[in-house]
Length: 264
Image (spheres, rainbow, N blue to C red):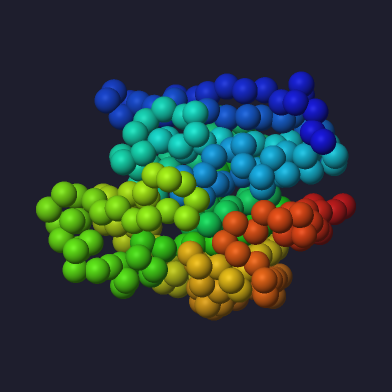
């Protein structure tokens, strides 16, 4: 188990004026020469879920730094969930990384966090940010999910709700509260698409994808592979795996992938 006493909790302020929100984080210090493990969670998930905690435990065992946080409108961070967009959550992710300023990092993105991870990669290159990526681990990644997965499946009623109310609701398999998808999220998603050209991550990439995933079909991971031309990209298809991939055997696969990326 991880040592909770060596984990510090805090928050950073992102945005200005009426757009200001407090982004909560949990941070584990590591050895100077060790990379930081950065957790990028999924839609409506938080930094104390099974996989996020397992990442922190791995950091505790190996002496690596671990950075977890909640997007605005998620977990214990400030801000309204309905204001959330990929651009907004990307801004917060980059702000957290800049706050801790690791020299080397492994980005670990789950579901929507996989999309945000790939956008972070693009922004690191575009802005020439001073962080070297040692690896990327993607768990049931959902890049471009608003454009690729949601929009084509919208019912007439949902399209009407988007046009008239600015959002539509969808049953959630993980919460008694429905998922809410706003028009702003959908429109912003089109502006943040990554599956439109070559993705040059410049580091090893390991994708874990369940074949019984009802939220993100495994064919979506195959499509992502087409945009990752590097030889150092591994896709592990888990025949009986669901979307969460949080069973002990799934966690072990994630740990193995990260250890392979960070070995001396």
